[in-house]
Length: 116
Image (tube, rainbow, N blue to C red; front, side, top):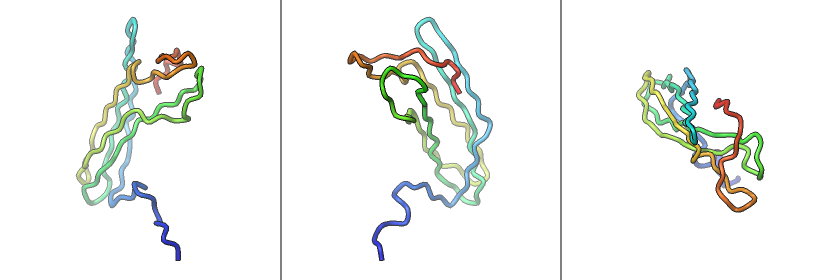
């Protein structure tokens, strides 16, 4: 019999079921920066309080250097009581999207402003 665990640590098993809804994405641009706001609801559809870790990933569609396929930028863990709904809000700025480019400098490259 193998001693390997059935599920790796942090696999995400829970006694509750969570449902995501009401996604809203907004972009506010300034002269030299921007703020992308991502908000959504998470509802505990289970019968007991459960912890949910909401995660915000970004995808760089075109870049001057190789980047990971998806990058975790923010996350938040909350205990949500059974039958209750919580609103999560994340904000990203120019600083959050910079990368180390081929000339060995931090740079935020121009990209798709469709913050979705």
